[in-house]
Length: 484
Ligand code: ARG
Image 1 (tube, helix red, strand yellow):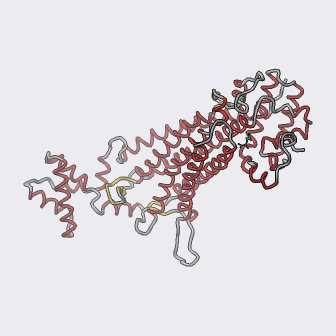
Image 2 (image 1 turned 135 degrees about the horizontal axis):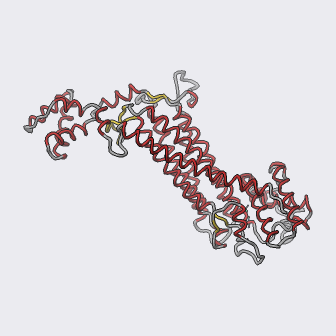
């Protein structure tokens, strides 16, 4: 017997059922749905809406279904989704007189909105944990490279000397904001739509506060039409994942670029590379490339979700169902990719000699030379910029050292400074040492940042662990709940 279609409608066509079912991706919300059911039943009993003996039996039955696992249920697509599969199973187990009372005062609309939030908050915390691990690993790597001089690029042209630690901390800072964004959006995920019914709540005297508390939500969504129809928490999540993906993709791109023969500053571990079936010498950065491409899908997913939602009228429309697989796809891509990118970074081989060679080449210290002229000769920066620029051009034209040419150019303007000062200005290590402004590359400053950053990471770690603890407590409590 199909509990959904025995009344108003006749049988559904098999191909239509397959086309419309969400069962394939409802595995993501199976556990959440059971928890949501149990909380609802506890509340129904406490509010005097269903009898104690019924509530007890229903909770026992739900526990049994949970232990059985979704794969052992009758996943009949004509039941639409996991909500009906579970209810149908329960009715088969307990009979309709008992199990038929589960759906009192609620709808699949508030149910699915609740389930998605319950499942998503855990997936977000999983991603946050991975990000925290990655940040810790980045800090460890940075500690080893505070004095590893390299060149920094703008426009992908040699710009100024820096250190590899400084470069790594740029990854840290961008990913830290991803953590902050996800934690912020968590506040808007972890709010309860349950009790909103189909759209207009219910005439039963339910307690939304009680189910909110039982499920570990931080607040209620205060308008029931909004509660069942909004998926903005998913849009926010997908946007945050897209931004995170952009930051990860940049790291991948740099790993690909810097491990080329031309740059040759980094070498990716063999475990993350592939070779060619024809060219025996090849070592290809396939993992970084695949990651770069997978991360692009996040943007497509965000656009799909935005487009599905943009012209939907209030309140529930079945279109909403199609947002769910998009969400889980993005979540899975991000979870897997963080692991890969962190794995590559953690095992990266750093070619310090090549980094220093690049920092010494191609006038990367020219800015400091101009700055030195400003300090030593009390001339305006713009004038110093012109003098050094002219010296670089002449050095290139005549294939002569900048150190000598700049003295001649200075003479032309009746200026003169100590040769040692010029030497120092042109030394990349001296450049780096001097840049101790907050956020700069000097080993001293980088050391300070590493300390401050690791305190912050520990703080995120605590916040995430607390949330996970609370969720696990809620889950244990619900799964083992005994009505006394
Ligand atoms: N499978 C549906 C979804 O994911 C559950 C809600 C169904 N509600 C309805 N009115 N058909 O959105």
